[in-house]
Image (cartoon, rainbow, N blue to C red; front, side):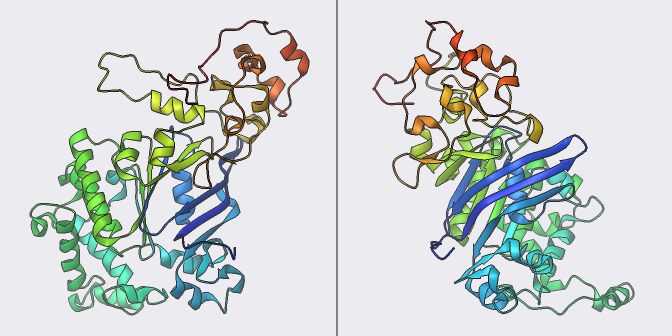
Length: 428
């Protein structure tokens, strides 16, 4: 990894599997992602594409029966690299550290100070028996007491370790309470930072007394308690009405500008991507199938899946026009049911014989725009198209090979399933 750039985060060859009674689920497969310091990187795709598993893998939050089976997660932090270099020399390359090679204790200490996460459902992420202010104050206190964390100098104060004896004393001596008064004050500051009105009074309320939008803001405040370098936002606007969604996105944009933190934004909403992100990765069946800048994805996309997602967006300038949904469903990620081919082939209007082998990632124009599709270097040819009925029975493609006899019997003339060029002569 000596050629690693100044990216704050670089994921290489990441694979996450779930080992269930039904078989092995390939949730994330051989994933490569790089995120630059201070940028907003978006991952977009349908439900079931592996977006949230990717976020949890980066955070180190994969639980049984799941496991990260392969890959590297390189995080750039000179202080951390220096702190672990002697004990974990193989995990360090310059000022980069492979989080996958660190002991779980060190990895855990990075959550909050280096990495923090906004989860999809704020209602299930707060303890209903504690006030919101108490929970935020506890998050602040935890980070302040993370004295074992080599990056703890970033916190406002450094507390000592909190033992079982300390806890016992706190039940009878108010002066020995775990959460300090300064942490409670910081919790109120965080509520004010994320736009909660009357933060002092709201800090004393319980989660059920908050509206959905306010609770999402409180979760953002909790994620900011440790002043993280990287904020992972997993569907931060899910289940919110459009007005509240806009407020949350404005808030994230403002906080990102103020703090210069890096954001990994997970969403199924391309409108959110267009509004917030600098670069995008389009995810399907556990893989990034296309990645690039906003212009690459929205104006110069190559992969038919990306085109399908864009075609599913209502166009306010063409009121009444029918949407063009992607036919079919996201494939099963069970290992024994995944064909060794392009996973989108059975839904793709431009599927050709070449698509019956698993495509590598190919550069389109430069290293910033890449796609996992044969169309990156081959024009669509109707004469080489795979007929729709070919995928009605997955038997012929489970080994990734095509039987020539299956293709010889297809009709000589067949209506094109999609245009090769648009009106301007540009490939889509």
